[in-house]
Amino acid sequence: MSQRSVGKFLPSAFSVPVPAPFVQLNHVRVSLAGRPVLRGINWRWRAGESWAVLGANGSGKSTFLRLVAAELHPDPRS
Image 1 (tube, rainbow, N blue to C red):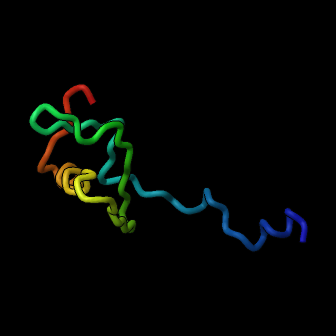
Image 2: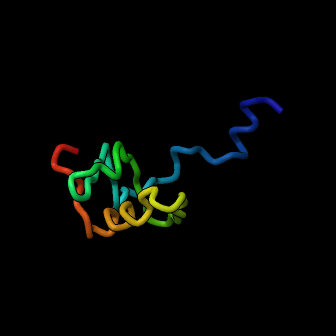
């Protein structure tokens, strides 16, 4: 099958509108009691997406979720 005929059967990636993220983090850093606990976080969440947050105890999962829920704020220099 040629590349030209494949294009007839597959939808173009550009034909589907991508919703704007309703949460977006760019180069975010969070400190608790003066100690950095999250550094360099880049993440976005768009409508219709589902995410799982996995990691070892003490790795920052709850801090990350509190940041996404706006219970915590990033460091000003983020």
